[in-house]
Image (tube, rainbow, N blue to C red; front, side, top):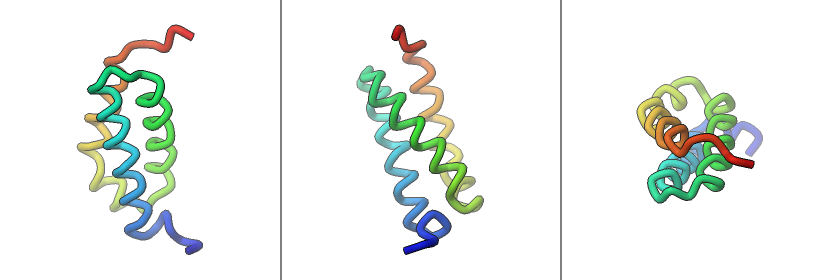
Amino acid sequence: MPQWHRRGLGRLITEQHLELALAAAEAGDAPPARETMSHGKELLSTIARQHAEALGELSTRAKWAVAALGRDPG
């Protein structure tokens, strides 16, 4: 599907990334939280604007949770 990122599938994939990042951050598992959040941010910039806006609250929660883990020591 050439336009997956502009359709509901893009929103679903992005939402799952953000939820996984949030869950990993809440579990204190920093490496997968950071990696998944990185992919989530990239997806947010790719999907249709209305989908990105609809995920705004989840995105903010995930970003803050990952940021609360502190800096990567490596």
